[in-house]
Image (cartoon, rainbow, N blue to C red):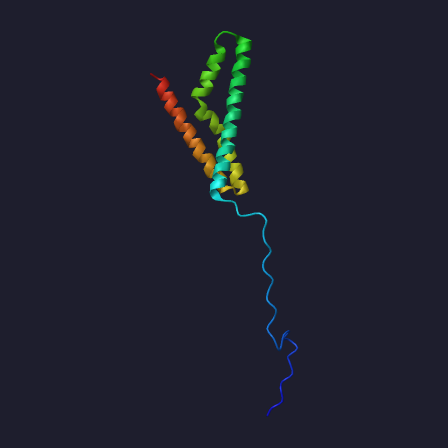
Length: 130
């Protein structure tokens, strides 16, 4: 009967299996849900719309107090009827900024609200043309 071989210096566990690996650490931050990211993007653009509306209102008030008469309503009317074009001034940079940060879900939410705003603005524009 041959003699048992001595263990090789390159094997760490010659007579047993290696110990099992520890489980991966639990992550405390879950993966963001795409639907929640879309809602965040929609809320972000609605907040921007609110700020733009307040800016148009304040601009109309300032011009109305300087010029007087019905100029306050003229500024509000131009601001409301052209809101589709006003929103492009902050929607396009917002989308580019979110794309650089890799927030594709938020981009989808911003685009959805921007399209809905454009459709609503177009419908109101057509309704007031009569």
